[in-house]
Image (cartoon, helix red, strand yellow):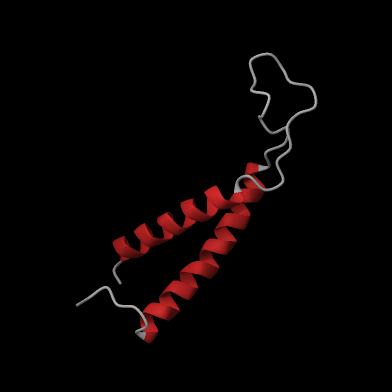
Length: 77
């Protein structure tokens, strides 16, 4: 697998995991400020979620490479 393919696969996995992790632990603010949505989270903790996403992406990419190398799936005909 080339470097461009690797980057594309990692980016796709990262974003899929990020959007999956994003809603966990969010609670709306008790006092809503003017101009904010009532459903906006009080403490979104985006850095923590990005770190978790990166860790999960590394694991999932490793699984992807293992499955691909074992020949269970092939992208070539």
